[in-house]
Image (cartoon, rainbow, N blue to C red; front, side, top):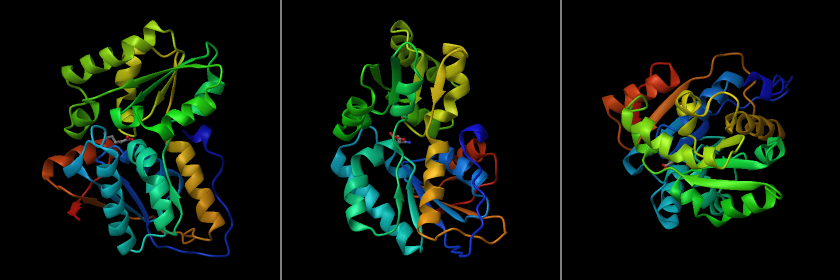
Length: 275
Ligand code: DGL
């Protein structure tokens, strides 16, 4: 990950230590939080997981848009200086309308189609996504635009998000679903796989066990962190104080078991508050 992010240290003559709001349908956005807190360690973060409504992947656009607007309001009420939609499904379905309503920087997460298309030697790329991303026109337009001359196999993966939410990463069920979803990509001989859902980076080891280590796996945590940092600098929103940033965690359905899942994924203690 260090290799893909340029040096982020910058000398600043301004400071704004309000928190950055980050959200997802559930625990998946923690893959983005990990990268942000590693590379922007003095920023305060508020993470909001909409567990009560996860997964978003089997929901209609109107439902996802309503949830995004409710969550963005919650975070803005907590004085966040920027928003990160740490969810591909919410980004492709709701970022455009949210940008029209909110005047702080909003950074979304979209599958790394462009770098994958450039990287692929076989010119065959697989993308693992939720069902709601797979049918979304913004996503399909992105594929069309960036994958010229490249065959893209879009693989929806129902069931994976639920297993990750339940802390069932090592279950037989998770292994067998991954086999089912990766087989068509192996048959097509792709050489690059894009993780188009922020939950999936937590399955990288399992994916590599099935596909081997010769294929390139791409996720978006590093480019999103870089874009966030660029926006903070551009809008004079960086926190230039030298303290370690705090991370506060909120959930629409907090419980001890979800707290444990979060702790395992992010490797640090988590206290989940309700929102
Ligand atoms: N982590 C999500 C994404 O990146 C959400 C998945 C879901 O809730 O179905 O798409």
